[in-house]
Image 1 (cartoon, helix red, strand yellow):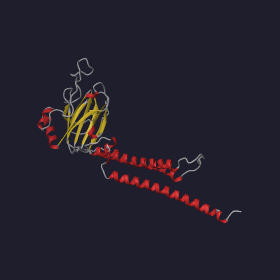
Image 2: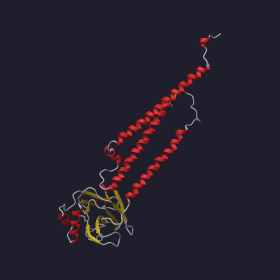
Image 3: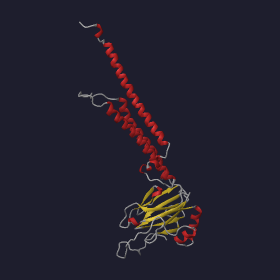
Length: 323
């Protein structure tokens, strides 16, 4: 015979089990809420400082000198912050599952159980993230490659093995006329003089093979193609005056590394004086001296090419049109 005090009523067992399950659910919800609050606090902290500068631009070059470069930089930083936010959330879920559902015995877990909200989240969230990134990428790309009908300055970039020629044009397209020209040689680095605060269109063509016009501070480069292809791009303005190294970014042959030039950004008044001096027949060095600028490139120097008449491209060969 069993004493009445030792009997366990089924309702009491169910009540006890129900209380334990409810407590676990509340603790799980509390963990998720804490994770969400932590992620939100992290985003608030990140938006309160220069994230790109703090983390070295997340691999993106800093120091852009055009509005287009700033737009591309901002898109990259925003994408990295979004990726970090998604990563922190996913890592949090992974570690929570590792701890919450760790092995507690030898029994095989239920194999047919599923979590519908979680599966919905993992299906819809990636689509939303990709859609948002695609939208902003398309907006920035459209803005960066946009060209105006009448830019303030048009420069024809002529690449050849292995140097540069810059022709200042009086209009756009092949039918425009060259009013002044800068031609680089093995002994003299070509200096491309441009004004600050003005829209500038670059029209590129190659005399021989594929080259690539690249100034790192522009955060933009375009291949220079041979034949009838005429690549063009435009910057709405250059916001910083100074001297910047330009390079060929396409492996174009034996002396590819020697294809340097210098971008010299000056005030609009100095630019007009430089262009007037070139139109009067002065050399590039004389025109630079006339506006108070160093006569030769200051950020890069000519390489010793060791060329002679037996080389493929001898030093006395004529290269590029114009002068």
